[in-house]
Image (cartoon, rainbow, N blue to C red; front, side, top):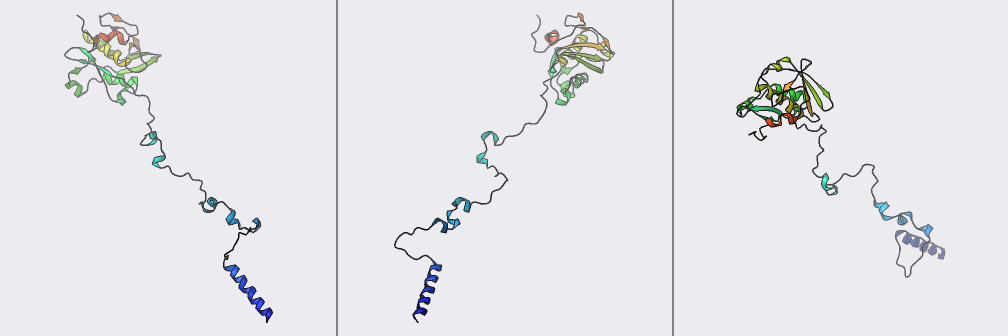
Length: 222
């Protein structure tokens, strides 16, 4: 009977231990080997989500000032600030006219645009051209900053004051193209002399300064 009571008491004690930790009057030191590993691991590692190899998306507040609303500039070549020179029919002075990028992208297209003459709008505004014999551009040869412009022989049929203006139109238009500083004329492959403002013929390389006095913005000669 006593043995049975002892066994019942032991079972009740084991049940009480399995259900929880009862109140204790003093601290009890637990050997480190008996502490569950889940209690010794850092709290952050136990609660942190699995790591990811993908970078977290940037929020607007994490972008620098230059990143917000910034656009990537298109890869294009440097803009060509060239112009064709036409004649003001009231003053016989030369006027620079800017055309589309497609018409000024190369020196050849720039000179060809000049040879086509003024547009309807430009004509209505009083602009004309002294290049009145419909010459064609055969080719342009570049030697450093010198452009040798070969035109058809009809360019040589221009006479009088118009010949000076026509020569000036070609030279000023060509040297407005970046990298071109002087011009020589050939007609159907043959070198030719053209008149300066004074009327003197010149077969030397011609520059902006040779015809600058014909510009509409140039001071009038007394």
